Length: 158
Image 1 (cartoon, helix red, strand yellow):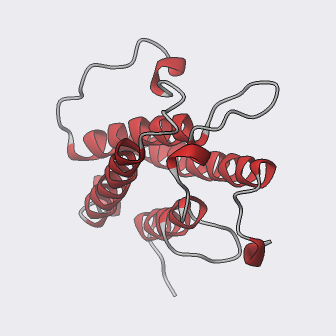
Image 2: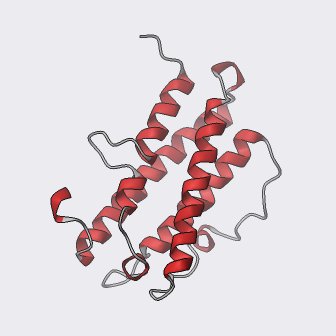
């Protein structure tokens, strides 16, 4: 099998978004999560899952714009601003909207990656793709850990 670099990036993105292999993709990590659990803050502080998903949405959407060479929206003033507020445990509709945005961004990223070939790759894009996929996987691990801490992780998945 002769894989090009973009084939590898596409496969890695699929593994981090919705294709379960020996580690969990984001879609599975978020499956069945409600607004109450998404806005739960770990003891001693730290980001909620809701904030982590906001953060991933910000950077995945930024990557889509970079791939498509579109005008970026106003950049966040700093990294902390990409997380947003902790989320409202009672606002299940807003949480569903955040999840819908996540799905849309990830599908847009998948479509964008499908249109790029190795000859179009520039060093900046290669670095951006590699960093973002690792970044996604890092935060997926955090989401699973928080779910286990709060008791919302499904027993059959342990």
